[in-house]
Image: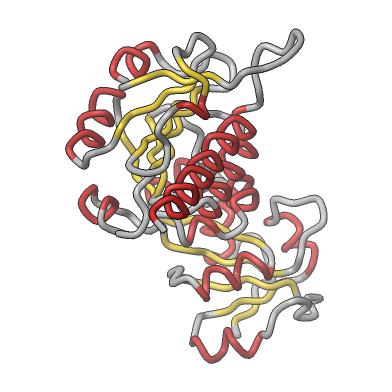
Length: 271
């Protein structure tokens, strides 16, 4: 195991740079922190380049022997240096540099034949919302997620934590414009469903059981006009009282689990 003694160390500096989107994009790598995310990466084929540990890390919640068996390079550093590198208030003592997995469109759409629904994030900015939506899409059996240009970086430390390992299981794809995204979705037989306050039907009356691409819009401005014009239909989530809208992650969860309900119902009916 290598030992890092200062922030001038090459390994340390390169890891610290990955806290910035510019370098994550350039190198196609990102940081994950904590034993749970590291375990998820190992169990789900994440390509780990380097493990970084604090010298006071006691191996809590993780079997260090797994790392040695995998033959992954490791480097240890004093707790003070690790705290500077960490993105959390209470560092967990272990982090890793991971390669991004880049999906081509055909690989994305064929990545899980038993799954057919897709979540589309249109310029969302809150890392907590993005990570939670990824985690929910994974739990609800969605095929993957498409991120529109202008959406916050899904490989930021905050998104990675909120996604809780789903980045390693859920295929992701990026699209430049709504037109490009809709064309791609239509080529693969998807029905484009947008959430909008003026939707022409409540979400539970929409066909979401399979082959639906559910578009969730920006926290402040909602779904873009182009998506609204190109979508197959608009849905709304009925609300009581004076509440005008829901948190983006909450709205996405409602629609994704409506997909689950409809899918399960269709299975029961067929039986």
